[in-house]
Image 1 (cartoon, rainbow, N blue to C red):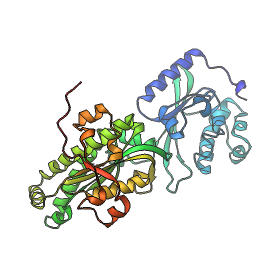
Image 2 (tube, rainbow, N blue to C red; image 1 turned 30 degrees about the horizontal axis):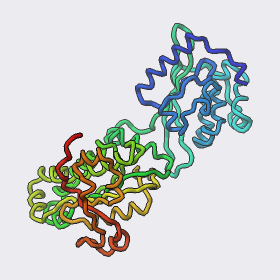
Image 3 (cartoon, rainbow, N blue to C red; image 1 turned 90 degrees about the horizontal axis):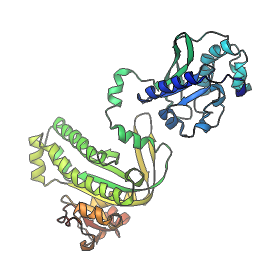
Image 4 (tube, rainbow, N blue to C red; image 1 turned 120 degrees about the horizontal axis):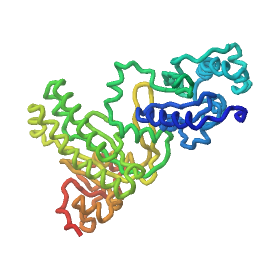
Length: 403
């Protein structure tokens, strides 16, 4: 049926591509169709949402109704939204092509058979809902007629969050690159990664002796500072529990196992200073932390095949990872005392010579102890991670001379 459509004149196609390139700068999800409603452009963000980068699989060059019958699009939005989308656009198509309803397919055509032809306005809006989620995502949509010098070049179909503008500052406070890394995990899968657990020792005793407002301000500042150390090294921040943090450094994001291990060690070392810097803004908290000998303890471990993905509910969005190594790393951190940074042998041995040199580590001079030999190892640490060899990397050796 697509063959019945008129070829797009080269000047019009070139102009549509110019418009598409301009719209790409906004980071919006959109598609452009020509005057006959054939798709000439899928934006990069729309491809990410669809989970498909192949233009042919998405239906480039097909009538926009025909693309919606392809596997990649079919079932993406609710049935009601499919009807809304068809009823919104079909009148504009019928104005040009009386048989356009046939492009919907028999089932959908029967649901919107009452549509009547009408010219497309300069702008129209509607709303869609993504299917298959407990908390369905609402999407605000806008159609714009692209007209120049008295002719219609085509139409821009733009998709965005149906979120009040007053809430966007809250949603946009996070790190954009971190969200990009999280977005790539929309489909859970196995991947190698370095794991980091960190927690402030003796903080509970301090929290009892200062006003709740002051301790909350400290925890907030500390979490922000520690997260920054993860994000600047292309890591993914996981769960926060009290004044503790979890992070992951994937080979996919860092480029190699050596780079992932190096980033995790760097972040853990920097977090210790970040935590103390946060305390300096609150003298009472800083003084009590010093009196109690509070320090940031960390555990670092290597997961060769963590099962990682998004955990999305109505109240939060985070990345989580499953694997024995995650639990073992948590136990390693719990066994650390006095500001120790306990790194497993499995993690350290991912480092190459260059990474070790930059970190000031001499892998051939390290001494490992099993977690069960550590004075701070509790019952759970002994049970879950007792036999894992670890070494304290909280203090670096002098860096080796550059080659």
